[in-house]
Length: 292
Figure (tube, rainbow, N blue to C red):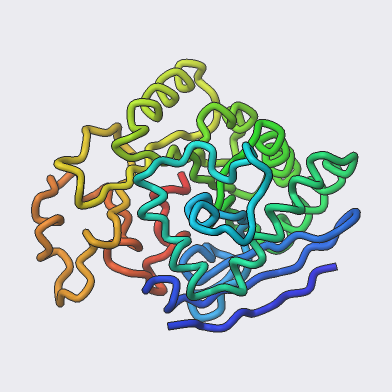
């Protein structure tokens, strides 16, 4: 049984975003599928987004909190860097959309219970069936959080395998945990990187692609004002500028100093939703940079 909940429009990127969620019930408990007008892809509209993502706690938020945490060693984003934690957009989401972040917190606890139980396969089927029926145009893993174990990666792979007609996509820095995902033909594996883990991302991409597997791999590079330059990246890579580099407040964002310093090829790689702002035509779905 699914209980859909529309969360309110709040006032920053997260503060001006419409969020939504659906409660998915299964053996022994429930999980939340979330969504928003930026990532709604094809199962909703900008004005009326529908849930199409599964999200967890973010390491950046947990690191600054003392009121709630997992056991020592149980990280939410084990491959996170100081760069991504400082830039993490979930800071704003947790502040401006606390109702949504509370769902991520619940999921973080519940998915670990599921993985440790005999209900794993049943839950994979529950999620796959829901996704196939309600998000046939595309499903995102982790608006917040990341792959935290190979067992969790295997669970994600099982959901993807059971929903073969759905195109899934994921951003991950957990390069040493995602082996179960690298030979699926219905998930785009986006390797999130920055100056601290760029070489590791390149190495993982090169080694994996020598196996000629089905899963598309591409680099998604986060850059901030501390980067002297953006490294040379393979065709198909995506550049995500930190908030300080976006041309917000300018009548024409392309007049910003950061944009002017980019090459023509780099400009083609920039995430248009992050740099120019979300809109009915500029959101995940109409933009396919990360979904190929």
